[in-house]
Image (cartoon, rainbow, N blue to C red):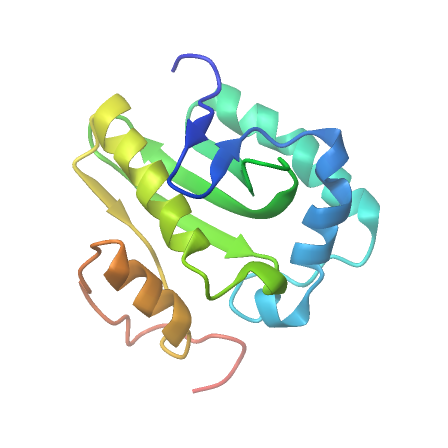
Length: 164
C-alpha cells in the first residue's frame, strides 16, 4: 500500500491520527452513547486514546486496516473516526465510523463513508465494502442507505450484551 492516504470529501477531510487528537479521540470513545453500539467498553483514561492513536500507524503498516481521523477542512480538528478494516486488497473490507455528538446529524459521517469507500474501490480495487450495524442503530442504518449500501442480512444468531 502506498503512503497514508489523506482524502478530501465534500465537507470533511480524512487524515492520519496524530498526538494532538488525544483529547477528541478520548471524548469520542468515552462517550456512553457512542460506545453502546461498539463491541468494547468506553475509554476511561486519556492514555487509552494515546495508545489507540499509536496503534493506528501499525495497523496501516500491516496493510489490513486504515484508521482515519474525520476532520473539518477549515480547522483540521478531529471530529470523529472512519476505519476500513479486515482489508483484503482486490476483494473486500469492512467499514466503521463515529462522530462526536456535536457533529452528528449533518451528513458529515455520510461524506466520510462515501469518501473512504470511493478511495477503497479505486485504489485497492475492492469488490465489496460491508458494515455491521446493530438492529437498533437506526441512524447508522440510514447513513449507510444514503451512502448506497444495501442491506444484506440480519444476523439472528448474535447475542449482544447478554440480551435477546
